[in-house]
Each structure stands twice: as structure tokens, then as C-alpha cells.
Amino acid sequence: MSDFISGQDIVIEYGILPFELLNRFIHLGLSPINPHTGREIEVSRFLGSVFKFQEKDDNADPKDELLKNFIDANSEMDWSNFQLSGDDEMDLTINEALLVHIYKRKHYEKLVAMDQINRHGLPALPQAHVKVAAKKSKRTPTIHKNILIQRAERIWQAHPTMPPSELCQYPAYRRDIIKNNGESYGEGFFRNCLKNRWPQPYQGPSKNLDIPNVTIEALLQDL
Image 1: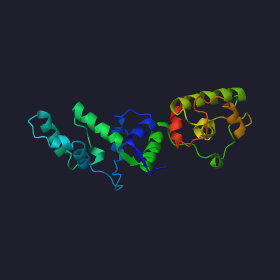
Image 2: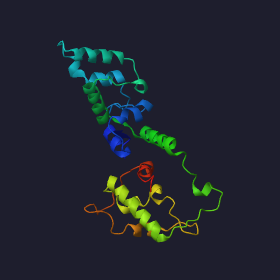
Image 3: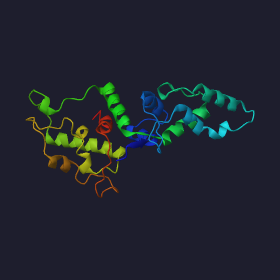
């Protein structure tokens, strides 16, 4: 897996709108990266690259003056304080450029985890560290099967090429699916629930999509 991820992939993977990339991630420290040097691209260099043709235009269009003033005002700005211009055309150009740039994947995943904690609280401790009796379930295997099928269908709507064998490994998919005596179901139960249910035409070899568990958790938060 690459150490970098594009803005477009972030938007698709995390399920946000394109213009939200700036507020949700870049303002929190996720900076565009130069693919040749691996270093952060400063705001001034980014704007100079995006608007290089407009800057060379010497006509008297008032928008050119607005652009020049905007670039000058951001010459010493960092990404955490960067604000759009307020001009629809200019801001669209900036947002489109942010989408095609790349970002450090580890930094992105750290921000995703922080966002999930802010929304849903800290994750539960692993079972080995919880010194309480295992929670018992009052649901039957049939009810559990129906829940798992609903969850799988929800995941496949967003990620139709994810094979059942990979889907079954996500903790978010298995959440709260336990036997009445508090024991866990075996691997066979989770696989059998999805037998012959993977939608066509995607049945085929397993593909590792490297989708974070927090992304699946967000998809299934109401199921």
C-alpha cells in the first residue's frame, strides 16, 4: 500500500463532499505533498502553481487584481489558517487542485481515528482487558444472520468489489454478534451468512481493498 493518498480518494473513502476536504482534514494539519520530494507544499507555492497562468496575464480584468491580492495575502499563511477567497470560480479551482494532490496516508488515518473518537467516543477495550463477564445475547442465530446480511448489503453498496472473505474480518461487521452464552461464533457462521449473496458481476478472486475499520464502522453505525 502506498504511503500517500490523493484528495479524491480521501473524499471517496471517508464519504465526504469535495469541498469538505479543506475543513475536515487540511485545516487540521493534513498538507498537500510534493510527489518528487515528499515534502509539504507551502500555501504560497500551491497558489502560485494553481494560478500560474492567471498571474502572467497582464490585462485589466478586475478579477486579476482580486487574484493577485488573494495570493499576496496568503504569501505567509500556513494550511491550518488558510481560507478560501470567497470568489466562486477561484475557490472551485482551489478545491479541484486540492483533490488531485497527494497527502501522507498515516497522517490521514490518524485524523480519521481522531474524528471517530470525537463523534463516537473511545473504542471499547479488547476483550482480554475487560474484567467483566461476557455480555450475553438474547438474539437467535437467525436474527444475527439477518443483521449480518443487512450489514453486508450496506457495505457492498459502497464497496461492491469487497469479497465476503475480507468483509467478514472487519470488527465493525462482527460487532455485537455473539451467542446466547456469551461465546463468539466461529468463522464458518460469518461466511455461511453471506454464501451466494455477493452481488454479480463481482464474484471472483479476493481483493484486499485496505479500507480502514473506522470507515466500515461509520457505514454501519445504525445497524
